[in-house]
Structures are given as C-alpha cells and as structure tokens.
Length: 219
Image (cartoon, rainbow, N blue to C red; front, side):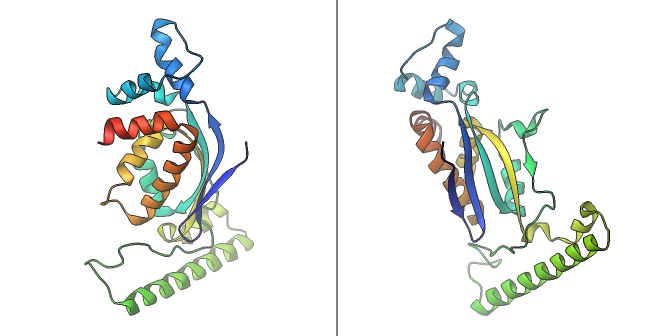
C-alpha cells in the first residue's frame, strides 16, 4: 500500500503507514459469539453495532500512523484517546529521541486571552518564540558536542513550542473517540486540524464503519 501523507499546520503531518483490517473484519469480530462469519459486509449490521455502542469489534482493526505535531497537541492526543494501546501494557508508542525538532510552531486560532489581539503583539510573540527556539537548539546541540548525554541536553528544549514525531497504532474505536472529542468547536484549533486528517483517512479505509460511528454516536 502506498503511504499517504496529509500535511497539518506549518510543519506537521499525519502519515498512514499501514491499515489493519477492513469493515468486514469488524462485522466478523462481532459475529464471533455465534461462531459465524460473512464474506460480504452487511452495512445495517455495523450500523446497529455503532448505534447500540457495541464498541469492542471496532478495536479489531486500526491504523499505523506516523504523526508530527507540537508538544501540547501531543499531550492532548494521548489524554483523550480511549482504547488506544498506548495506555495498555506493551505500548506501541515510539517517539523521536530528542523530543523536539528545530521548527518552532506557529500558533493557530486564538492568540490572546480575549476575542482579539493586536497584530503587532502576534508578530512580536512569533518573533520571540522563534528566537527562544533557536537559542534552545544552539544550547542543545552545543552541549551534545561537549559530551553531555542527549537525554540531559534536551532539557533546554521548549517542548510545547516545538514539534515531535511519533509512530503509533490506533484502533478504529480510538480514532473515533479522538475525532469525536476534537472536532468540537471548543477544541483547540491545532488539534482540530489533526482530527480532520484522521477523519479523512478513516473515512477512506473504513467507509461503512466510520460513517456508522459518526451517525450512531455523535448525532
């Protein structure tokens, strides 16, 4: 399967590495209790699973993803995923070793504490942020060259202001809970963009199940 990559924000992305399973696998997982299986998916059956919140079959399939995102988005990504194997023993979560890349994030959406903020303040904020990130990377690389261990040198890095990259497997249930929580108008703008990317991927590879989940639970 050709890798798919959806660019997100200024330096981020969601890359699909592999797809585990199909809509039919979800149906057959649910039919296990009757020791039965189908060769062709039954949309109505999957719609009933979603409508009645029989969620365990949706854990039998999933996505292997590589995601590059700002540190604060990473925190929300972990916190709000239910059914993600990262919270289970034997985690599949692997992360970039220095926990940051050289690109400073450009804040999206709300800049100020109120409804609006002066343009000059936005410009000053971004300029200072870039400068701080530059200094942090200079210190980080400088101390590594002097012999300091990377796991100690990275303490200079402003984690929330920089990007990190992870690889992780998400079940379809986990992907749905993430999307359901983060497509809200109250969600932070940055993480909404990542939820849109995952929505696009899930809709393509699990069209029947994904649409059933969205209709059966959200509405």
